[in-house]
Image (cartoon, rainbow, N blue to C red):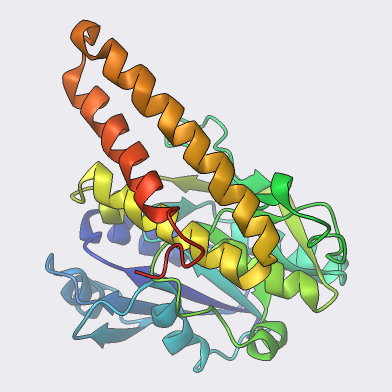
Amino acid sequence: MDVSVIIVSYNTAALLEGCLNSLRASKGVAKEIFVVDNCSADQSAQLVADHFPEATLIVNDTNKGFGAANNQALKRCSGRYIVFLNPDTQIKPDTLQKAVEFMDAHQEIGLAGAKILNPDGTLQDSVSYCYPGERYASGETAHLPGKIACVLGAFMIARRDLMITVGGFDEDFFLYGEDQDLAWRIRETGFEIGYIAEAEVFHWSGQSEINTPETSVFEKKLKAEYLFYRKHYQPRTIARIRRAQRIKALYRLLTLALSYPFARNRKAHAYKAHCYRFVLEMTRSPETGRS
C-alpha cells in the first residue's frame, strides 16, 4: 500500500462527497481511505456508508477533536505514507502520485504540504517559515533542520513510520495548532518539512467552523497558540510574547474606543474590541492559556 488517506469529518457533508469523489478519481498509487466522523449532525457518516464503500468509516459519538480523530485512524493505516486530508478539499487525479514521487525522491523530508489553491484557482498561502511567536524566541528553533516551519494541515503527507515514532498528533490540541506542533516534533527527529509544488489541492477554507461565532474561533486559536508556546518555548520567551501582546492589545483598545463614534461597521468594531479584551485576559499571568 502506497498511501493511507485520513479524512476527519465534522458537519461537512456538502463538501465531503466532492472530496471523496476526487480521491476515487485519483490514479497512479495504491491507496486506502479512512473517514473519521466526529459526531456530525449532517449525515456525513451516512453519506460515506451509503456511497463510498471503499472507505473505512469510523464514527465517534462525541467530537474528539481533529488530532485525536486522526490518531484513531493512524493506528489502522498500512500505507508507506499517510495523507491527512481535510473534507473541504478536492485533489487532482495525479496529486497523490506526485506527492508519493516527491517523498520517495527526498528522503530528508518527513512531512510535506501540497500546493493549495482557492476554488477559483488562485494560490492559497500554505507554507510558513516561522512559528507563532518565533520572533521573540532566544534560539529555541536553531536546532530544527530545514527552512520550512510548517505547512497548512488541509493536505499533509508524512512517512507512516515517522508518524508512529512521534506518536501522531498531540491530542491536547483540539482543532488549531496541531499541524504546527507536529511539524516541530518531526523536525526534532532530524527530518525536514517539504513543499510539493507539483501536487495541487483545491481548498474551501474553514467549513467545519462556518457556524461557529468569529469570537469563539479567535479564542480557540489564541488558546492553541499559547499551548504551542508552553510546549516549545522557554518561560522568558513566553513572557516576552505576553508583554508584546498586552501592549498591542491595550493600544488597540484605546484607539478603538476613540474611533467608536466614527465607526461605519459597528459589528466589526465590536469583534475587534472583543478579541483584544480576550488577549488581555489570556496574558494576565504566566499561567496563560491554561483555562
